[in-house]
Image (cartoon, rainbow, N blue to C red; front, side, top):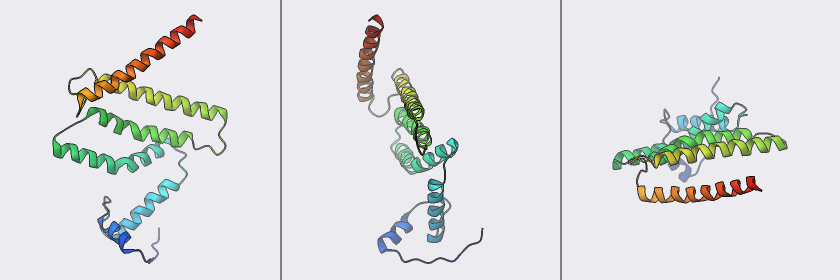
Length: 169
């Protein structure tokens, strides 16, 4: 692709932001601008491929993930529950973006979206409940996490009772 010279005036605030912005492989303001344009192009391009949505979601969440990992490393802490959510988010976000990408959604599209979202939420809940059985699985605040999971289990128990009663009727 041929390069075209381009010049623009930006505010001091934007120039300072660009100077402080950390983008892998981009050192100069021109490199950073090209990287930002490439990211915007990817974001606005037709994301008809599910894998592209997963990649874009992971890239979008990458700065938060790096910051969290750096903080955990610096403080010598680890939270498997936060890690599982961080792993779960990009694929779930990608699924919603991909499933909601219909121009004129039909009933079956909305049902498929709901089914897929609920499958992903159930997998996350199951994954979190598995952590309750490992001593180090709870992370930073084990008692708090276990209390949250206990509340979810209480609701699940009520739901199971309601479903059983429906079957008896």
